[in-house]
Structures are given as structure tokens and as C-alpha cells.
Image 1: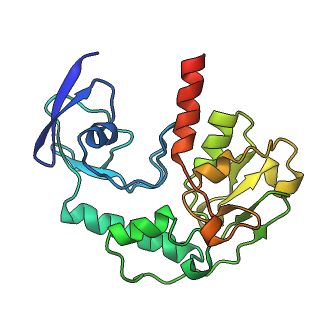
Image 2: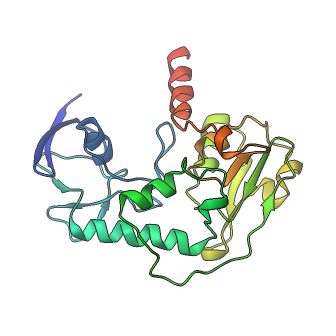
Length: 235
């Protein structure tokens, strides 16, 4: 496969044709924050945290969806980008009720880690304080919509890896919610196989195993990519 040579943060980087900027940056050891991106799942560019500056473009471009090209010059950590990412994380905290002290994923949460990475010390926006339900109708798992950031990783893991598409997103804007089987309680979703892949994919404490404490929480989102790779190797 043809190679492409580009510059990322002033470093000369080689990448395969068709690779995204995010993949090329990771191969070169350059970190670009993400939230909706997960190895093994399709890219949707929804969280906008991986936006980068590309010379010749007036727009910020999502690194996960933008393919590399010969001679491309990319900046991943300018002050403009740092401020942009900090604002996104603050808005995520303002939109739902992320009270980390009582969350089962506290200390093991990608959103919490992102807040530290981008230097978020407070939220500059008004909290919306929405009324969000907690669904524990499933015998093994639960979902706390207060923690959900609508990254749709659970939706894609259920559809693309498990192949049942129990999860989906309903509503728009601040009224958007992930749902199971056209909006029935999770425990009544007949398509759910209870495989737990949505739990593996969830970056926060939104989807959790019932009866699990903070110390008992096991979260390994890399297992999604391992499952996909193992299937490709076998088939």
C-alpha cells in the first residue's frame, strides 16, 4: 500500500494511504483526545474532541475521519484547539448530571480523564440539570442517563459487533437519549442478548453492571477491538 508523508506538530510522519490523521498520529506516538472513537467500531466524528488544524483549511477537521494526504501539515495541540476541547468537555458536564463522587466509574472514567487532560477546573456554563432516569429493569445491567454523553459507542458495539442493534438514539438536542428496542425498558428489550459489549464500550458510568462497586468495576474498552480482530483472523 502506498505511503504518505505528512507533518504532525512539526514531526515528519509516514502513514499508509487511506489512514486517518488520528491513526497516523497514534502510530507516531502523538496523542489526540477522543471520546466517541473506539478501536474496532466505525468512526462517526460526533464528539469533535479530535478536531485538528490542517494547513490550507479554514475549518477544524476531525482527525478520526480525515484521511492523510501527501505533504499535509497538521497541528493537534494549538491554543485554539486546547480552548475548543476544554469548552466541549465543560458543555458535556453542564448538559447532564455528572456527579463523579457518587458514580461507579469515578477514577475509571474517560470523561473524567478528559477533564483532567484539557485542564478543566470549573464549568463556565449554566448547568441544565435535566431529569434523567435510571433504568435497572435488566437483571444484569443498568443504565444511568445522567452519565450518558451520547457518544453512541454502545449503539455501534451492539450493531456492528454483536449484530442485534438493541440500542439506538431517540430525540434531538438536549432531549436525545439512548434507547433499547424502540423505547421499552431495557429488561423488556427482546433483542438484547445480555452480551455486555455495550458495557465494555461505554466511556463513563452510564452503563454499569448491577451490584458493582467502584472498587469492583472492570472496564476494558480495548476488548471490543480484540473481539473484532479475533473474528477477522478466524474468518
